[in-house]
Image (cartoon, rainbow, N blue to C red; front, side, top):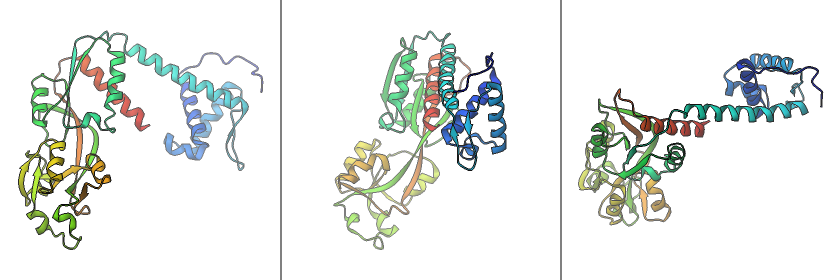
Length: 310
């Protein structure tokens, strides 16, 4: 390993930026692969790495026709960079939370089983929030979408998680994930016995349907407009019960129906044309009032989702 002839001295923002670029290049295994990740040209990346090598007086990597590889010194610098960037994140989080000695309460409302949907990552978000706000009393309940909207608007709840069925002026909406909903029937339902050519729109629309009983987005209402609405079942569990009776068909998110499909109890009807997308949103009240507890929960949620998508 080459001995550094002079001390490095202070490390500033510019060097940290170069170290971040160096780490991405190392993680991607070369300059070309790092172009997309960094959204800068290969020549610009090369300049940054060369400047960093000059600053440290070290050769960090070999690049050429034989490929990309870290030198022995480069490996040490890479490991030190990972440690440095991690400590900077820890420092930033500590400073950000210095003035948040939180107490009080936070009420979270969920529609159906959103809280247990793996895509919501809600147990992990709550774990992270509670590790910071240890003194905050949490209340988590399941309720109907309209009731969740009302309670958030009237400050009876701090945040709600609902399928997007309308947009109210007094609420802020934040996208969480998207469900795809198919039309399902039990495997012993008469429609499940028909071939694709026999499953005409007329046949499907004539069969009794169980639905949520709510007016929702126009594009979703369009799927129900000509159907034979014969039962109301707001919760997915109760709707599945009606479907399993073989007397009804109905729309369900693919995620919730999957266990019943895999067990052979439910089947999608005309899935190539009978489906729609349903966005899951977090809702909060539009207000200028400061609510540190709610703000911290939302920040914790955003930070977790951002890290999951990195």
